[in-house]
Picture 1 (tube, rainbow, N blue to C red):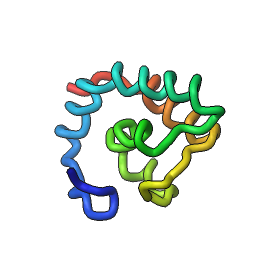
Picture 2: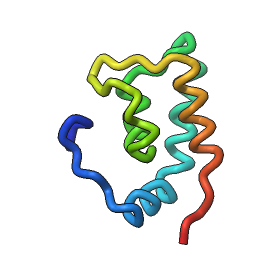
Picture 3: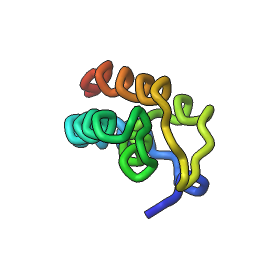
Length: 88
């Protein structure tokens, strides 16, 4: 699988298709992690959600395998996932 450092940019259609397919499972993973990791989400759990987010949202974050997502970042991801609309 590709790392964040060298992952090719998804085309818009493909990104939204992936979001549609994975939105529910990803949201569940985020909420499970929020409930079990003392307000941090391990990189391994958050990785799939991050893959689904547009590049503009990802840019502020340093992507590394030891990345820890703190509550304000988790809220941004959850807000994004909950706010998604179906794209034709």
